[in-house]
Amino acid sequence: MKITKNYIDNTWIDIQSEHLWTRENPSRISETAFIAGENLSHVDRAVIAAKTAFPLWSKIGKEKRQHYLEKLKIEFQNKQSELAERIAIEAGKPLWEATGEAKALVAKITIMCSEGADMVKDVNPENLSGRYRYRPVGAVAILGPFNFPAHLLNGHIIPALLHGNTVVVKPSEMTTGVMELYFECIEAAGFPKGVINLLHGGGKTGAALSVHKDIRGVFFTGSWHTGLAIRKATIEMPFKILALEMGGKNTSLILPNANLDQAAHEITLASYLTTGQRCSATSRVVIHDSVFDDFVENFRSLSQRITTGDTLTSDTFMGPLINKASYENFIAAQKNNEGGKLKPILVGGAAEDTRGYFVKPGIWEVKEFDPNGSHQAEEIFGPDVVLYRAKTDEEAVKIANATDYGLAMSIFTDDRERFDGLADLLEAGIVNLNRSTCGASSRLPFGGVKKSGNGMPSALFAPYYCTYPQAQLFEEATWSEEKSIAGPLAKLS
Ligand code: NAD
Image (cartoon, rainbow, N blue to C red; front, top):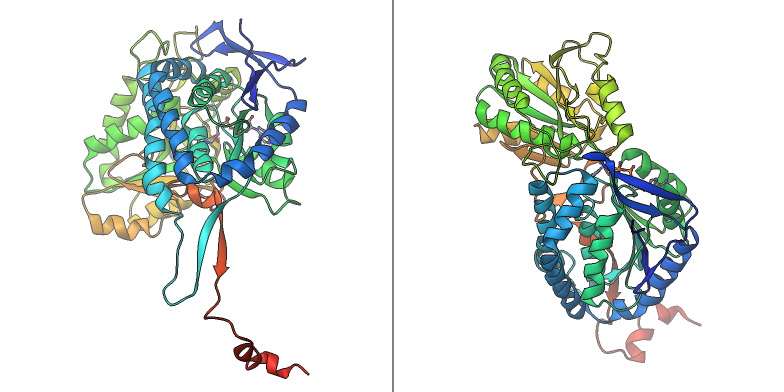
């Protein structure tokens, strides 16, 4: 079996690690997906490559950099089905869903080179002899999670490169093969030496990369705990720009005048897509008392029809959980009713097919509100949903905001004014109308408040953390010695 390699200075390098790990295919755990390893001595090598490439890459101008990205787009298109297959195997997403992720790689380049680029254009303020322009940060580290192994890294990589930064990428140790294919596209697009480098490894490699003295920015997508670890590890390096996209515990609100069929369909999608392993997955639903029973009947019936199976060969809706630890954690959670505060509406647990980490969704009705209850508060990262009754909009908002996370929420109502009023009260970076919490557009910012982010949203706003503003003040008028000494310099002896 092929062992994954690092890509440094445009060369594929054997990892030569003593610490190798075998990654199983989560749909068919008897099969090996890849073997990977890490070599901490490669961290410095990769950073030096990126640092050395920076002066030239930052100078050649946006147009030339865009030219390389256009070539990369063609390579992504050529490898689309291969990328989709790898995503399906390693991340455990059905092929139809993985294909959507592979296609998004191309769309990201298009948007970043148009609307995204406009976000950080030079500005010449009126009646001021000066301007500000956006400069690249330097060599940056990009770290990503398993659940969107290509799209989320790509969401940092494309704006970072376009705006003149050089990059070291550290993908999740659970999805290394996907990024190897991605880097085959990078190689074929012919980027100059050292502009973009790939390092495989786990937390140790991620940590060593983040704290490297020559890394000027850490663009991270992953869990709150890892984001916090990066923040702590870099606390004495405040010059590093940290963009931290972290977890979510996302709530939908269903108001009495909502279309309940639409709500049930949208929430089914958002709760179970990627087997509930999306940062924007819906895991809490607050339903107006008057429509609770109708909604629940509809939602439960759709949830019972969820199909699972091998992500490559069967036409199923939901793949497996990512690994054994997640699977065991999910099954244990299905046995925990928070000391009787939750009543099961649909009992979740292991699916009949035990050839992979397949599970059945769990739905709970909250009998006693507890903002610290494990299902009510923690990111279970699986198909697990709690349902609340609320008598008023105020109560619904109170429940929705009673979580430490603040990534995505959504409201189902036919009343736009009511949506506008409630959206103002919700503590979340994304609030959708009559859509699920998963609906996101690259043409809008994507990021959360509270434990979900650090005020550096990605998607359309990524160019802001990929750059810093440089102010330039120009002389007011032609300089002359007389004019100069008529000012404060007249006080010179
Ligand atoms: P994770 O935090 O376990 O890992 C993310 C990356 O960080 C991996 O590459 C990992 O190797 C690396 N890492 C681990 N320890 C590190 C350390 N000490 N220093 C530096 N890097 C380290 O996340 P995961 O389990 O792969 O992904 C799931 C999590 O990601 C969930 O919490 C989910 O909500 C979140 N997520 C957030 C977004 C978003 O946009 N907000 C999107 C997708 C996923």
